[in-house]
Amino acid sequence: EVQLVESGGGLVQPGGSLRLSCAASGFTFSDYALNWVRQAPGKGLEWVSYISSNTTAIYYADSVKGRFTISRDNAKNSLYLQMNSLRAEDTAVYYCECGGSPNWGPGTLVTVSS
Amino acid sequence: DVVMTQSPLSLPVTLGQPASISCRSSQSLVYSDGNTYLNWFQQRPGQSPRRLIYQVSNRDSGVPDRFSGSGSGTDFTLKISRVEAEDVGIYYCMQGTHWPLTFGGGTKVEIK
Picture 1 (cartoon, rainbow over the protein chains, first blue to last red):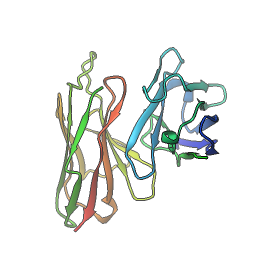
Picture 2 (cartoon, rainbow over the protein chains, first blue to last red):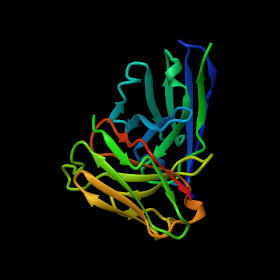
Picture 3 (cartoon, each protein chain N blue to C red):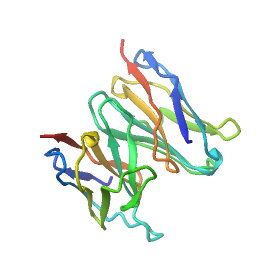
Picture 4 (cartoon, helix red, strand yellow):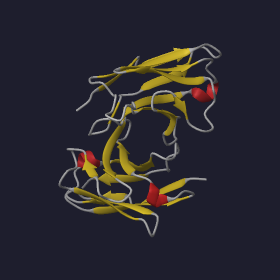
Protein backbone atom coordinates (compact mmCIF):
# COMPACT_ATOMS: atom_id res chain seq x y z
CA GLU A 1 0.00 0.00 0.00
CA VAL A 2 1.29 3.42 -0.96
CA GLN A 3 2.04 5.62 2.04
CA LEU A 4 3.20 9.20 2.17
CA VAL A 5 4.02 10.73 5.54
CA GLU A 6 4.98 14.36 5.88
CA SER A 7 6.98 15.80 8.78
CA GLY A 8 8.99 18.83 9.79
CA GLY A 9 6.25 21.39 10.27
CA GLY A 10 5.97 23.66 13.28
CA LEU A 11 5.82 27.23 14.49
CA VAL A 12 8.39 29.58 13.01
CA GLN A 13 8.84 33.34 13.08
CA PRO A 14 8.50 35.44 9.94
CA GLY A 15 11.76 35.33 8.03
CA GLY A 16 12.65 31.96 9.47
CA SER A 17 13.29 28.61 7.81
CA LEU A 18 11.92 25.08 7.95
CA ARG A 19 12.69 21.87 6.11
CA LEU A 20 9.79 19.56 5.38
CA SER A 21 10.21 15.88 4.63
CA CYS A 22 7.96 13.31 3.03
CA ALA A 23 8.70 9.64 3.60
CA ALA A 24 7.28 7.34 0.94
CA SER A 25 6.70 3.59 0.92
CA GLY A 26 4.75 0.96 -0.94
CA PHE A 27 5.83 1.91 -4.46
CA THR A 28 8.93 2.42 -6.58
CA PHE A 29 9.66 5.96 -5.44
CA SER A 30 12.27 6.68 -8.10
CA ASP A 31 9.74 6.08 -10.90
CA TYR A 32 7.42 8.94 -9.97
CA ALA A 33 7.30 12.70 -10.06
CA LEU A 34 6.14 14.39 -6.87
CA ASN A 35 4.44 17.59 -5.84
CA TRP A 36 4.07 19.67 -2.72
CA VAL A 37 0.57 21.10 -2.28
CA ARG A 38 -0.56 23.30 0.59
CA GLN A 39 -3.82 24.30 2.19
CA ALA A 40 -4.12 27.43 4.29
CA PRO A 41 -6.53 27.17 7.24
CA GLY A 42 -10.10 27.07 5.95
CA LYS A 43 -8.96 27.58 2.36
CA GLY A 44 -8.61 25.56 -0.81
CA LEU A 45 -5.68 23.66 -2.27
CA GLU A 46 -2.65 25.44 -3.74
CA TRP A 47 0.11 23.73 -5.71
CA VAL A 48 3.57 24.69 -4.46
CA SER A 49 6.27 22.76 -6.29
CA TYR A 50 7.02 19.82 -8.60
CA ILE A 51 10.04 17.59 -9.09
CA SER A 52 10.39 14.95 -11.78
CA SER A 53 11.47 11.40 -11.03
CA ASN A 54 15.09 12.05 -11.99
CA THR A 55 15.13 15.71 -10.79
CA THR A 56 15.69 17.08 -14.30
CA ALA A 57 12.48 19.11 -14.15
CA ILE A 58 11.61 21.34 -11.19
CA TYR A 59 8.87 23.96 -11.03
CA TYR A 60 7.61 26.38 -8.39
CA ALA A 61 4.56 28.50 -7.84
CA ASP A 62 5.36 32.19 -8.21
CA SER A 63 4.38 32.71 -4.57
CA VAL A 64 7.34 30.61 -3.36
CA LYS A 65 9.89 30.97 -6.16
CA GLY A 66 13.27 32.04 -4.84
CA ARG A 67 12.36 31.12 -1.27
CA PHE A 68 11.52 27.40 -1.41
CA THR A 69 13.67 24.57 -2.77
CA ILE A 70 12.34 21.12 -3.60
CA SER A 71 14.61 18.08 -3.63
CA ARG A 72 14.45 14.33 -3.35
CA ASP A 73 16.63 11.41 -2.32
CA ASN A 74 15.58 8.36 -4.30
CA ALA A 75 17.87 6.13 -2.23
CA LYS A 76 15.97 7.15 0.91
CA ASN A 77 12.50 7.28 -0.70
CA SER A 78 12.19 10.82 0.55
CA LEU A 79 11.02 14.19 -0.73
CA TYR A 80 12.00 17.50 0.83
CA LEU A 81 10.97 21.13 0.82
CA GLN A 82 13.43 23.69 2.15
CA MET A 83 11.47 26.80 3.05
CA ASN A 84 13.34 30.06 3.68
CA SER A 85 12.22 33.64 4.28
CA LEU A 86 8.89 32.39 5.55
CA ARG A 87 5.91 34.72 5.60
CA ALA A 88 2.60 34.68 7.44
CA GLU A 89 0.88 33.74 4.17
CA ASP A 90 2.91 30.51 4.04
CA THR A 91 0.92 29.23 7.02
CA ALA A 92 -0.75 26.04 5.82
CA VAL A 93 -0.87 22.29 5.96
CA TYR A 94 1.69 21.00 3.48
CA TYR A 95 1.05 17.74 1.64
CA CYS A 96 3.29 15.72 -0.64
CA GLU A 97 1.48 14.20 -3.59
CA CYS A 98 2.48 11.46 -6.00
CA GLY A 99 0.61 11.15 -9.26
CA GLY A 100 1.04 7.41 -9.09
CA SER A 101 -1.22 7.15 -6.06
CA PRO A 102 -4.63 8.61 -5.26
CA ASN A 103 -3.89 8.85 -1.56
CA TRP A 104 -2.27 11.76 0.22
CA GLY A 105 -0.51 11.76 3.56
CA PRO A 106 -1.80 13.46 6.70
CA GLY A 107 0.15 16.62 5.92
CA THR A 108 2.32 18.71 8.21
CA LEU A 109 1.24 22.07 9.60
CA VAL A 110 3.49 25.08 9.15
CA THR A 111 2.60 28.16 11.18
CA VAL A 112 4.47 31.39 10.53
CA SER A 113 3.83 33.84 13.33
CA SER A 114 5.66 36.04 15.79
CA ASP B 1 -2.09 30.93 -15.26
CA VAL B 2 -5.00 28.65 -16.09
CA VAL B 3 -8.01 29.59 -13.99
CA MET B 4 -10.21 26.72 -12.89
CA THR B 5 -13.78 27.77 -12.11
CA GLN B 6 -16.04 25.37 -10.24
CA SER B 7 -19.77 25.62 -9.77
CA PRO B 8 -21.74 25.56 -7.67
CA LEU B 9 -19.81 26.64 -4.57
CA SER B 10 -22.24 24.73 -2.38
CA LEU B 11 -24.38 21.74 -3.34
CA PRO B 12 -27.08 20.53 -0.92
CA VAL B 13 -28.24 17.09 -2.03
CA THR B 14 -30.84 14.62 -0.83
CA LEU B 15 -29.49 11.17 0.01
CA GLY B 16 -29.91 8.84 -2.93
CA GLN B 17 -30.24 11.66 -5.43
CA PRO B 18 -27.70 12.57 -8.12
CA ALA B 19 -25.23 15.44 -7.90
CA SER B 20 -23.21 17.21 -10.54
CA ILE B 21 -20.24 19.56 -10.23
CA SER B 22 -18.93 21.67 -13.09
CA CYS B 23 -15.33 22.70 -13.65
CA ARG B 24 -14.33 25.08 -16.42
CA SER B 25 -10.79 26.02 -17.39
CA SER B 26 -9.67 29.29 -18.95
CA GLN B 27 -7.62 27.37 -21.56
CA SER B 28 -7.89 24.01 -23.23
CA LEU B 29 -6.46 21.22 -21.07
CA VAL B 30 -5.48 19.03 -24.02
CA TYR B 31 -1.74 18.42 -23.75
CA SER B 32 0.62 18.01 -26.69
CA ASP B 33 0.58 14.25 -26.16
CA GLY B 34 -3.17 14.20 -26.77
CA ASN B 35 -4.10 13.53 -23.16
CA THR B 36 -6.19 15.82 -20.98
CA TYR B 37 -4.82 16.20 -17.48
CA LEU B 38 -7.87 17.01 -15.41
CA ASN B 39 -8.22 15.40 -12.00
CA TRP B 40 -10.91 15.42 -9.34
CA PHE B 41 -10.18 15.26 -5.61
CA GLN B 42 -12.41 14.67 -2.62
CA GLN B 43 -11.70 16.08 0.83
CA ARG B 44 -13.94 14.74 3.57
CA PRO B 45 -14.29 16.83 6.74
CA GLY B 46 -11.11 16.68 8.81
CA GLN B 47 -9.30 14.47 6.30
CA SER B 48 -6.60 14.86 3.68
CA PRO B 49 -7.64 15.09 0.05
CA ARG B 50 -7.68 11.98 -2.09
CA ARG B 51 -7.88 11.69 -5.84
CA LEU B 52 -11.06 10.21 -7.28
CA ILE B 53 -10.65 10.70 -11.01
CA TYR B 54 -7.59 11.25 -13.23
CA GLN B 55 -7.38 12.29 -16.88
CA VAL B 56 -11.03 13.38 -16.97
CA SER B 57 -12.76 10.05 -16.58
CA ASN B 58 -10.53 7.36 -15.05
CA ARG B 59 -11.64 6.29 -11.59
CA ASP B 60 -8.91 5.57 -9.08
CA SER B 61 -8.83 2.19 -7.38
CA GLY B 62 -11.31 1.89 -4.55
CA VAL B 63 -13.51 4.71 -5.81
CA PRO B 64 -17.17 3.67 -5.98
CA ASP B 65 -18.64 3.50 -9.47
CA ARG B 66 -21.29 6.04 -8.52
CA PHE B 67 -18.57 8.62 -9.22
CA SER B 68 -17.93 9.48 -12.86
CA GLY B 69 -16.01 12.16 -14.69
CA SER B 70 -16.60 13.52 -18.15
CA GLY B 71 -15.81 16.44 -20.39
CA SER B 72 -13.28 17.74 -22.85
CA GLY B 73 -11.31 20.83 -23.77
CA THR B 74 -12.33 23.40 -21.19
CA ASP B 75 -15.54 21.97 -19.77
CA PHE B 76 -15.63 19.11 -17.26
CA THR B 77 -18.12 17.48 -14.91
CA LEU B 78 -18.00 15.23 -11.87
CA LYS B 79 -21.20 13.29 -11.27
CA ILE B 80 -22.35 11.28 -8.31
CA SER B 81 -25.19 9.03 -9.42
CA ARG B 82 -26.67 8.51 -5.95
CA VAL B 83 -25.27 10.55 -3.10
CA GLU B 84 -24.42 8.70 0.11
CA ALA B 85 -23.66 10.17 3.53
CA GLU B 86 -19.94 9.42 3.14
CA ASP B 87 -19.80 11.67 0.06
CA VAL B 88 -20.09 14.82 2.18
CA GLY B 89 -17.04 17.01 1.72
CA ILE B 90 -15.35 19.42 -0.63
CA TYR B 91 -14.53 18.46 -4.20
CA TYR B 92 -11.75 20.07 -6.19
CA CYS B 93 -10.80 19.87 -9.82
CA MET B 94 -7.16 20.34 -10.79
CA GLN B 95 -5.44 20.79 -14.13
CA GLY B 96 -2.07 19.20 -14.73
CA THR B 97 -1.57 20.30 -18.34
CA HIS B 98 -0.11 23.76 -17.90
CA TRP B 99 2.41 25.19 -15.42
CA PRO B 100 1.64 26.23 -12.77
CA LEU B 101 -0.74 23.47 -11.79
CA THR B 102 -3.98 25.01 -10.61
CA PHE B 103 -6.97 23.92 -8.58
CA GLY B 104 -10.58 25.00 -8.68
CA GLY B 105 -11.94 26.78 -5.65
CA GLY B 106 -13.88 23.76 -4.45
CA THR B 107 -17.51 22.67 -4.22
CA LYS B 108 -18.95 21.77 -0.85
CA VAL B 109 -21.36 18.84 -1.01
CA GLU B 110 -23.70 18.54 1.93
CA ILE B 111 -26.81 16.58 2.74
CA LYS B 112 -30.13 18.42 2.78
